[in-house]
Length: 108
Image (cartoon, rainbow, N blue to C red):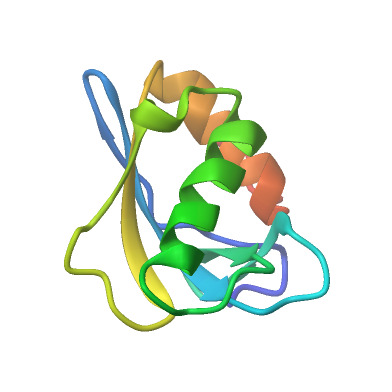
């Protein structure tokens, strides 16, 4: 990771943004903050059982990005801590908010 700040891997399209998240299940606090490599860090209280942590990630990301839960799509084959997410909405605004959450210090 660049010492100047996080550099998320964001993939913009006409109607949204795709990016990676790094999930920490069974966390004390639920939060979306910081980065791990090119992925946004997401901590949830839910255990990684029967999709509970994935559902909690969708809910938390929707709140953090101020979008509907239906606008947050997680790769259905997502296993493990690193997951690909797509959020539907205005790409420029979503990228700005994602960079803020990650603590990205670059001028983009």
